[in-house]
Length: 477
Image (cartoon, rainbow, N blue to C red; front, side):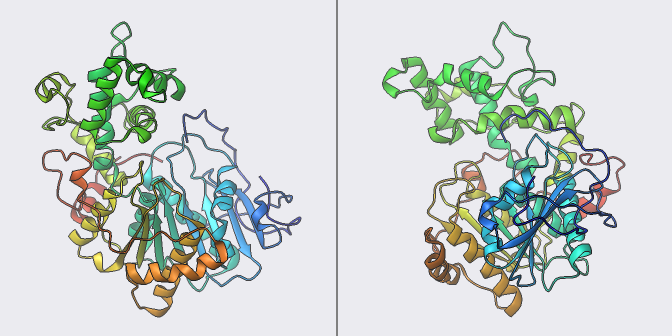
């Protein structure tokens, strides 16, 4: 891991003591106590965009999470504590420096930056939230209490950051505001239901994961715990069935028919069909086999699939399964949000996001509204069509909008944020594609609800309190 500039002087940033964990083999990409930290200095090299602009510190905290911090030469007094997306299944020291490189725009705008790799790979929102809070404490321990501290959650890190805000945001000396970008903030108990449906519907049509000649297993496992399949293997099965990634004229009549039905029923488009199956296999495998002791948190009973050439046959033949109530509870406790946030929260989301659907923002607003806290939320949307790829101009504009809101106490609007982007685009030249009039459709228009699954919050504050008294509830760190 490298530093931003020069050979650094010794600094109490992150602990370098303790056993380092070996990186884990990867499919595709609480412990917050009194900070204990020592010294670490790194030679120059990366991120190259910050060379000469900032001093960086890297290391490892007492829980085994790697961390990176950067303080610009002209620091404005406010750090941004970053919660990264994923969940990544690997865990090594390169991730946080890569994150800093990716979001160097925050440092360019005068903010210090701090990020954690989290202590392990795999699923665990509360674990990741605790490690994010720990890196904030380490930053304060090293540099003193800043003027203001902001959270930034990207993709799945949006769920993590929102959990940080609910869990630690009210404490004195904590956070002053939170920016969520491309946020996967629908919570785990409902936010993956479209991938549950994809797993079941694909198997109905393709019947090749598993094949009839292979050992059978319930689809809610994603893959068996001892599976040796790789992402390449999974996508090869999908290509075999649907012909995706080949010229449409080269597909068989059966491939065209099955692909059309899968897309119509799951409400996905062909361009995103190569990413969702990987979550419906490897992420589910991680959640079920490693985090929930083999218990099933997913179900599709009572769901009516529509849009195929023969809905009656599909609904009669598709695999059906019900969630284990304790597994569903534990996943909900770990990842669902109560909406009880008291920080200013601007969000930024691409309307055409193929991975975290923009309708997730409807669910987020409904969650805050259900808790009586939606006055803290300002949502902005752009006409972009990729996941986690807003322009640098929009990132700079968004963090500035949050900073202005916190400093002035004046809540911005989607329209005012869209207008202010032009001044940042004159610096970054990356484009401002806001649509201030856009409003996302309800969550249920994109992700089929389960019986009783329309109310928000998915986990109320009262449920959270009651569940917290259950020994071993949730997902272990």
